[in-house]
Every structure is written in structure tokens, then in C-alpha cells.
Image 1 (cartoon, rainbow, N blue to C red):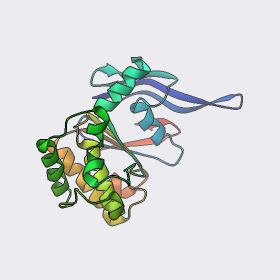
Image 2 (image 1 turned 90 degrees about the vertical axis):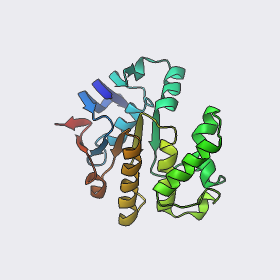
Image 3 (image 1 turned 135 degrees about the vertical axis):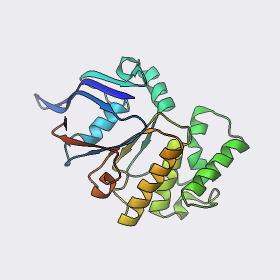
Length: 222
């Protein structure tokens, strides 16, 4: 479960302070597809980064599975994020010099975890679930944008994180691939329920939301 309490984030513009986030309290639906929508500049992406422990917030708390993220020291927070949170970015952040399988297994390599045949079979099963077939040894650059996005989804879920944060994940996809992206994300989430939070202005994504959150001027509208 993700809880926000008295969360604010301010920036200095010259000698003046501008408030980017001001959220007194909110609880995200656990194991659901949560979609944050709102106009550009409403604070959607900033809220994602606050939830991911990436920002230095001005005040308040973010609690994930009982852990107060901003009570942790920086190194502890980085470790917590690595263990419990995955992010899907607009530009996918895949490695062009790696194969599909190597990209998916990057979280294992970063953490120094063992990759055995059972893990490789899990990659194959996820690729099948995503209708990608046997492409483990293909170069990432050989895939279409929609295929790369589905690989990014698999990579984000391969270690079964507690939370997946998605920042405008369909901005570079056409309508068909946007729908396929959401269907694939839901399919994987049905397999292993994870709290998914998507920041978007894409109305096609909003249709798939189990919980829709409207943001205006850094505030969650109730």
C-alpha cells in the first residue's frame, strides 16, 4: 500500500518559492492500475518521482508497504527503491547494445543475482504472454517501438516489484500500440498483482484505469 501524508515539494524561482506539489493525504489502490491525469504542469511526473523516492521533498511522508521512504538515509532509500520499485519511462531506457533477453535481465545483473535456466524460462514465458515470441537473442534496435515498450514492461516486472511507476509511457506510441501496451501491462499485473501508477494525458490509457486520479496545480482533486 502507498500512503501520502502532508506531501509538499517546492522550488525556488529567483527569490520566490513556487509550490509544485501540495497533497495533504492520499492512499493508492493496492494491486490496481492507478492512472494520474491532468494538464501539462499539473505535477503528474513530479508526483511519480516523489513516490519513487527520487526527489528531496519539502515536507511530508511517502509510505510504501509500511516503510517511510523519506525517513531512510540516501543509500537506504536507493536500496529500497531498487528492491521494491520499477519505473517505465517515456523513452524506454533500453540498452541498444544488448539483446532482448539481456535487457530484460538487466535488473538481475545490476543486483548481482544468479540467472539460471528457471529465470530464462520466466523470460520466455513473459515474452509469450506479451505476444512477442522467441525474440530473446534479437537486438533491441531490430524491434518496433511497440515491441520495445513491451520489453520494457517485462523488465520492470521481472523481479516482481511492489510498485511500478510509469511516466507518460505511451507518448511515442500510436493508438494500436497504446492499447496493446495497456493490455499487456494488465495481463502481467493479473499474473502478479502490483501497484501500478501511470502519469499520462492520453485518454486511451485513462480508459483502462481501475482508479483515476485528477491532478490540478500540484493537488489531487477529490
